[in-house]
Image (cartoon, rainbow, N blue to C red):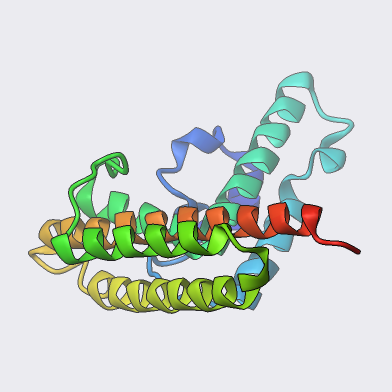
Length: 199
């Protein structure tokens, strides 16, 4: 469903639209053209920006502010691959994704434990910064692999077994989210080291 900019600016509240892809008039899919997404964002913001409705009624100004907020939220959601993947899972499953579910493949759980042990061993020695870089690189590689697997599965979300595929994709998503969190932990460790290293 491709809504015109004028429709977005003039009709209903932002909550009437089910998801961010609809707001941007895009087909729900994992791979997006970032330049097209950004161009569409600027077009939408131009149409709904509260400054353009300064002479309007209070209700119309409030609606413009709601739209501007919702367009911003949708842009952030579509721009970040992990959030976009989560949204796709929810669309395909027609339900929220339970990201707190901890069940993961045994092999991934073992890998998590190894990564944790590696980080703890490295964290005790400031002079092992290069090892921290290697660990971060391995995690980013795994993250890219998960994103590629997710992209392949999501291509068939509209097939008859789309909900089952969404469940499988949600499992990949949980692993991906763990890695994102772990990469944050690595960055925090790096920042701690920078605080104690002589300048």
